[in-house]
Image (cartoon, rainbow, N blue to C red; front, side):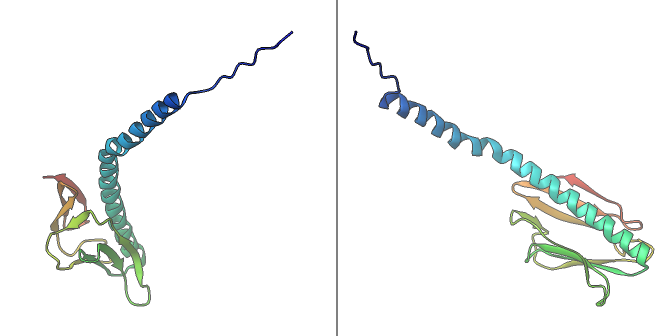
Length: 148
């Protein structure tokens, strides 16, 4: 009795078709995820900035120290520091696509030992093509973000 050998597998054409479909899907995914990435980047930046500001105010209140806030758009960085002995409380670098106040002058203010911000201000912030105004109010330093 002879046994029939059957070879099962995929032809070259079937393999190339499956591979091309996979490559098309992989090429489309980054284009679909890009808006989600930018949205996440915006939310993360503003949440982190407001949290850092609140932390600096709480630090000023609890340690009864003046806190100096400095935004440096050229270095894509902001920080909060106390005196030389204490040093930096918060030191953050932010993403290259984020622009604070299109001019290159450093932005600074102080947080008093009572937790109040020395001056109120509105800062223009661009993330990609979206533009926002980040406002710090005088007094307890409440802050909010508004889209332009």
